[in-house]
Length: 109
Image 1 (cartoon, rainbow, N blue to C red):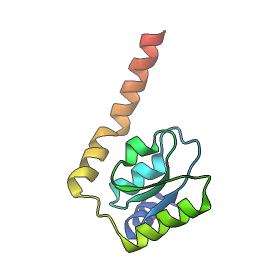
Image 2 (cartoon, rainbow, N blue to C red):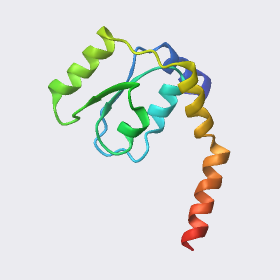
Image 3 (cartoon, helix red, strand yellow):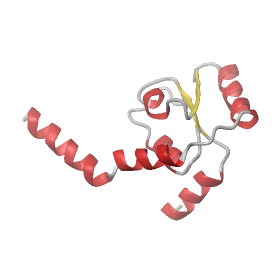
Image 4 (cartoon, rainbow, N blue to C red):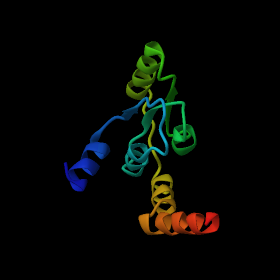
């Protein structure tokens, strides 16, 4: 689907379910948070640092833990504040990220 439709899906959802076991960064989680939608996430990789208190961390290897995270998302909704959404968006602008990656690569070379 296109970017506009994807953003609308994120924004109209109760939560994003992302119980990953090996996420490098978590772009879907970032997109969801920027849209104002919290995340049920696997407590692995970068997701706990990225999502923080704006979601529910689960053990992706434990079905009961994932189910409890989904249940919490439904029964105890979290509102991602506009300031958090704007901060995440500002911190992860593609132009800035690309510049930081190039700088990091140049430092290694």
